[in-house]
Length: 119
Image (cartoon, rainbow, N blue to C red; front, side):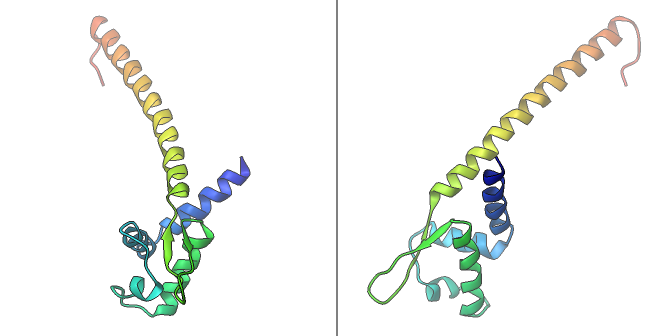
């Protein structure tokens, strides 16, 4: 389980930055070179490259080689795995909230039946 946690930490850390999320959004529309990715940002190509390295280390993107360029490619497999982790935990918490709601409703019904004022 520790390996999964480490992988999740890398992904969540990479996704914590709005610039990196914007880069992933751009790559969702197709492969792009560093220059193409850097274009809309008010930062140097070197700064964008650092963001790309973080995304690459988290295995959210990969780089391919096409002639002399190295376009970046979105790797959706890792995002799907993280989305699955989030969904499993969302279901767990939703189930707990549902049980709490039923318990509170039962307490309120008992209080009304016994003539107590609900809080």
